[in-house]
Length: 511
Image (tube, rainbow, N blue to C red; front, side, top):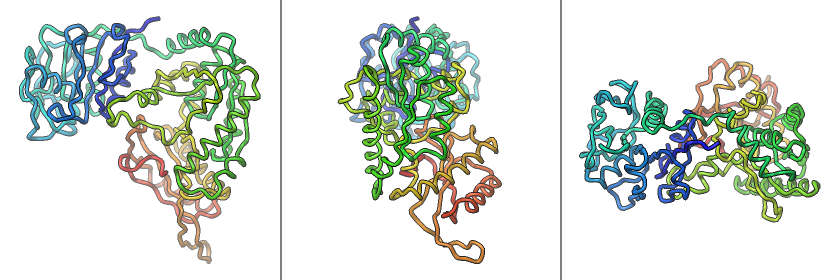
């Protein structure tokens, strides 16, 4: 089935991925491409959205794109930088704003009887993020909306399906942003809303059958959402020709190796568990630099995985749980915030010498879509709701050098924290949670004795994609109970602190 597609041209905004996710929430398929690399199959796109940018259209570093095949030919929505770009290079005027508008604003005027603003009323909250403003509209433009400080907040070009806004409909703070995108894409651009999890599963399984035939495929499972959903899609397509390998690197959560293997058995997957914990921990002995720890874990994982893959005869494909943010990162040309999504917490890819072709069934999906696809295949909700867990595991939550005793301590602390989040019904309200073992000892008193033992930090954050995150205001009673339980039950810990840093500037993980 051919889906209508929407093209998002990325000018480096930190919100570009959010635009795509909002479009996908409308059950519309879209792709992000760099502003200067319009895809060769451009004719297959039914509408175009221009993203924002940290750059200015007035500066020396103007990001130019070719709109000659878009304007007047396809419906186009220009957001923030895109709106200013249209104005600046089409007979309008953009100047530095006297009152820089960042954050919440309200639409004080909306032109009546416009499809673009259908079901959106004056007073609607929008989110601004710009230091420039449009002083004069471009040639042929009609004003559609204003805020108190920004007169030209939205406009359209007469005779074209070209619309422009100086606010960000994709962020949650724009309360009618979803409606605005729906008005543009469905009502104005006539894009079909047929991109659903069930359709994705059906089409992907058929495509995998055709692509893989009777070939054997090997997949490294992590226990996480992405690799598990990828495994289920492949299992539906090729059954026992999928060989899954789940490696215990000794840095998983308490009992996770056994628990995850048991869970996979219940899913009917062909899984081999490999306990290589001693190999990893021996290789990490004496290493305290975070980057060195990561590289060591990546190298040993590749060695273990390669050893196991060679035991399977005639394997032709390596399956990976790559998701869309990884793909966007690899093609971004702007160098802006959207170019630096993630990589540093994941174990690196496999070496060329394995000589396998790569299959990535999830590479078109965002994380929340992966979960919805998993749910449509009736996968276990606890597995699908699992918090993100870094590839290097507890290695980057133990600051400084690693020992087996430190791993034991952190596994015990983490288990108490996570189990309490579940029992207090807080787990699903948190994007990611974990404990960090700090490289400091502190004085304490236990009974009549002075102690000099470890300090642990608990971290729980709210996020939609991990790019930005805020600390979760967990109930004091919860923190009190969890702290008491950790100190009383985990030998070697006498102090618990709670991390109240947001990202940015603090990352979610500590290393």
